[in-house]
Image (cartoon, rainbow, N blue to C red):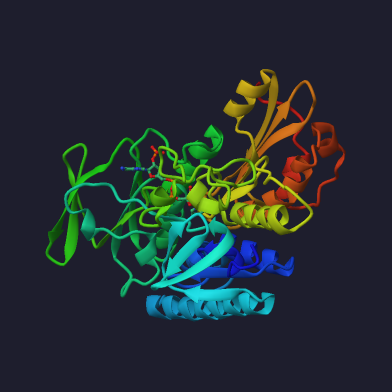
Length: 452
Ligand code: NDP
């Protein structure tokens, strides 16, 4: 054991890999991490962080409309400059890349730049050099999936969106998940003409149905051309732009087409088959409750395991792994009541079960729902309406689901997630006083169930 180069060799310096590396090193392990792209992975470079900066940028249009319509401000000479936003964002991401490098260095983790492949259960090769390790952690994340249709190469994915040379006048977005919805709202907010297509009858599959319906209404109300039961069958170049042919035979012209049609675990070319690591049918690395693969010295966390593909989940899995390998003992990650947000406009916040899931699990449930116009909009021309919903297990009185579509939904849901995780009952919610006037107080003032 002592003659191996490292106690842990991590492949992938994204959210999960970096956290596992640092926490393991802090517990005395000799750790190396290999990365063939920028430090920080998808979240920092082409995901959560730059996306949220773009969300902020796209909100100002609404703010301007609200302040001039109802609050007495007058604003002149307003314009938006895409290169300024893009380049400021890139500078901030580069700053974060440097911070990640510093965090690894401070923790005593060896950074090995380059693409790593598995040679055997204890050996990794990077740029022709071999490293041995007692344990190997695969934290390579996921990569955008592009449908195999004629002309698919003319479209972009979320990887390229952050670096576009010019803001398109018109964009077609394909998909109905997190990324499609968020970018439809971002581009619309930046003044782009947006069409979003989803192949099924209602987007955001897996979210509570009231959330899905309410958000669809809000998005359409803003002027996004949101079409369901529609997909793209082929794409061709058309002058300076692109033409997409849709499933109903019609065509749509755009300057850009974005495929936000899911992501797949990044397992290709890693040498996993050579070492005998089992994959699930979706290509994800199969792991047990402690993130261990069928090869005892090889572990995997984050999107590459396709459990819950969110940055805080990957980080949590990394912390648990460091604890299991070098800490107090085996700790398995907890995937129950994981809160999440979709940074659409308005945004979605959710924690716990959907109404449908709760009915399946508990049978008897109570549902509380409230839809209202936020106080701010009593003075604006906005038609935006907020929706809040609680799902309660009737037998235990526990609040098992909390959902919201409305401003600051992510911020509000994060706070309530503590209560839900702690097992708060509806009686606890009722006993909590509101903060007036806020939107969030609605969660503690709903008294009459709407169904169940
Ligand atoms: P999602 O899995 O959320 O959504 C993929 C969408 O594409 C679904 O609507 C799916 O439809 C559709 N789709 C899949 N294949 C095709 C196809 N061949 N043709 C047309 N449509 C297709 O993936 P995303 O890419 O949006 O996001 C990836 C992951 O990243 C998310 O699951 C999430 O975990 C994470 N993420 C989280 C964010 C956050 O926390 N705010 C933000 C962005 C990403 P169907 O439903 O019918 O399968």
